Length: 355
Image (cartoon, rainbow, N blue to C red; front, top):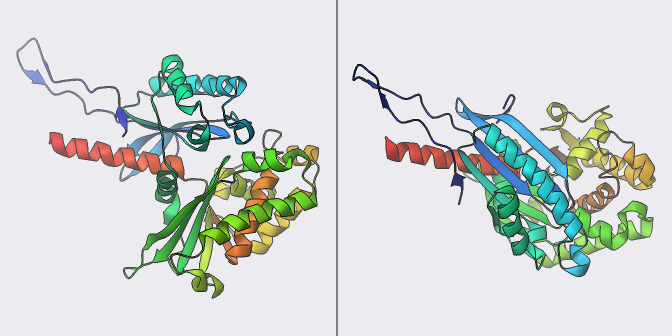
């Protein structure tokens, strides 16, 4: 999927053939397809708008804003008024962009915050009324599947297996991929654990995380991993050094940016980057030793993520302790790209039916 200028609902319409004054029928121009993937997570609101570009897609517009929709949900079970207001303000921006870009196919999804909050459904009805957007609350299984679809092309083709992880605000999705006879990879097992950067930060005070609290957060995550076990029987592949991690989340892209000492975040430097576990571990140690203000000064973290990133590091540390690897590949792609791929498939099916 190129980054450049630019149940799924469809919108917009192509012009029909028209008759000229001479009586001849003029063929209407081909419909200009525009796909929009909108992901409302526990922490972020993210939009990608893409257009067909050969056999791929080219991004024509994007939007991302930290809204912290799931703030407080882990303790009181409901979305707060302030959080809902922040999210709706961001979603109105997304709706305007989708209209301006002439989006023809769109899908809007909500994840853990709306799944777990008692008022998640009522909130999305408000979104429909105030922002004009229809949202699906997707299952953890579909969330994992979309993340895999969006980034699996970054798996090392020579590896025997890979673990794709998506550290979110309220949960972490994990997909174990195994190599098959044709040299490709297929999902072998998946799970969702109820730990994300927002939920762990609220439990352990991410703004002032002590070393003891950091270890406690790791043990929470490890306990969930141990309980899941090894249903795909891939542990020996990891222990033999024939597997790697593939991370798609703000945590792993932030770690990559800090490792590279980037003066500002650059997707072209981060997406596809290989890190050794030692390199990633060195960054997590540095970040966990910093004060909140020092983390906020890091250009690839900033003040909005300064209290969250170390909890993401704890999740990654738990993964590496339970599933030993020497390499981590970084993906600045994932769930939204998976949505866009689904929408493109839908458009092709529609085109074949009309042909």
